[in-house]
Image (cartoon, rainbow, N blue to C red; front, side):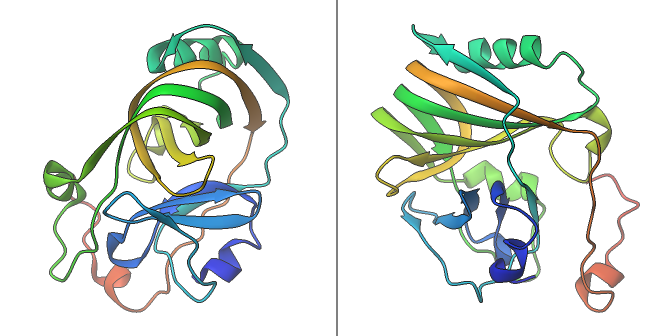
Length: 204
């Protein structure tokens, strides 16, 4: 669907763009595209996406961070705040990051390679002493194949110039805001074309 239509379904989320052309962040109703060189741009509403997970973000819990925290530390704090692993948790983190390790992917051409092959040669970025925002979800185990079980988070710098899919980070002061959802709606692609012909019974 187009990004304009996607934004009618939510104001917060993550995804990608057609041909896997970079990482998507939807934050405060604005879509950002992290290109393969790590730069962030704001794409037009006419651009289309084959995959995104979005919601209307309504924070229910807030956690204030004061000291050094690793990515693992932050995940433990979220798991303690939302111990039910079988529901969806929207995650918003803002703060100062001593180190932020991200990646993006370049646009692909047919015949499309599996994502696992594409990410073997993915461009990775090591940002230091950057302030920014983390957007994403902690997803239940049973969504495997539909999304990424566990933590799926993307980063956008405060100056909105760079970011990507998060691989690791170290942060100092900041805040975590969490919202939960007990239901989800999945919209499938147009019944014609590549999706209809894809063999989704194979382990991918």
